[in-house]
Image (cartoon, rainbow, N blue to C red; front, side, top):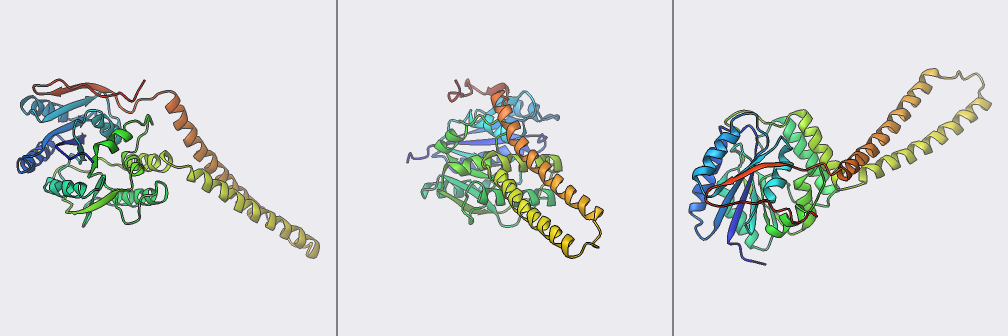
Amino acid sequence: MKEISRISFVIPCYRSEKTIGGVINEIESVMKGLSKYSYEIICVNDGSPDNTGVVLEELSSRDEHIVFCELARNFGQDGALMAGFHLVSGDLIICLDDDGQNPAEYIPDFINKIDEGYDLVFAKYRKRKFNWIKNAGSAFNRWCSIHLTGTPKDIYINSYFAARRYVIEEVRKTRNPAPYVLGQVSTVTRRMANIDVEHRKREVGHSNYSMSRMIKLWADNLFAFSIIPIQISRWIGVVLTFFGFIFLIYTIIMYFFDPTVPLGWSSLMSVMLIFGGIILLAIGIMGEYIGRIYMLGNKNPQFVVREVMAKNREITISREDEE
């Protein structure tokens, strides 16, 4: 495997005008002690409504390590990551958040773990300092990663991770209009590991993950890599049909042995509501897949780049995987 000589950091940015400068300064402070590596910091502004774009433009104009990518609108964290992946030039790509909760001091640990022969290394927080919504989402994503993408049970998936370049090159080939990066990198390789990391408490602002954003993320994770939800709905249908026939036989027998048993309107309505709900659930699951096929056929974009800026060099976005 090629020796690492250059590192690309990819940071999706949203409402981080007060934190992104500190994140970049911390990365550069750590990289000064790792002088054998060249590096770049790719900051993707994901349609932030605040002054994040202004801050990043100013930073990139005076620091040659910073690449500023401005998206045309908000595409979500995974869309921003995909845009950053098309700009990387490093042998190792490290992704981290823009809120300062991912300590850059662990960068050498990521590098050392990759040098041991791993292709993908995730941070594992000793103690998570998220709100309950994001903790619940993380637990669900972990279940999905284990049961849908086949991630080993002892591996914890996290948005703070490092990957060899070939992993990212494989991920950016996907044209899924609703990408889920953590799931996609996990399907590329089984040479993955964790490093223990302290999780910082958020000092500025609040999490951008509302309940609606978390539900969208869960849906992307659940439907992006597996047909298991459809298979589950099929087996639910089989089981309920079986019990339906058993109940029908029981009703017929009871009618002949005890004709005085009253016909139950309430029980009938309950059964109809249950079966109707299950049918609608199955239709909804199939509709989710069909909708994603439609978006893919309609070539809905994962992201749209408005401009890319970097000091003293010209940056072009790599889309060699597209026709």
